[in-house]
Figure: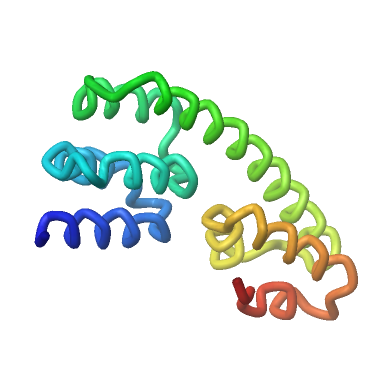
Length: 143
């Protein structure tokens, strides 16, 4: 039970820490290997939210820690890459729009954009069109 909790909390913690995701991946997956009932959940979390983890890092981690995972997980990785491309496109569009409307975009907002979900990016894009300030674009999004 304690390993499950630790694994879940660790996976969630680094979902929001884009700059630390790659460094934490090995530790998270080593722990996931010890908690088989949570492996699929952890993989989905990493695939959906860990933007700093690219295809090659996932492949290396997969082979090292989860060599027995089935082909279904490969399709999850493919879905991640598709979603990643979609999110990157929206993030680039948002950064361009914000730059045109409000000037240089601060690192604080760049980090928020790089860690955002597609839903958040869509909301911020809609707001950026007629926002009076960059701050009003980033009012917390209710899920």
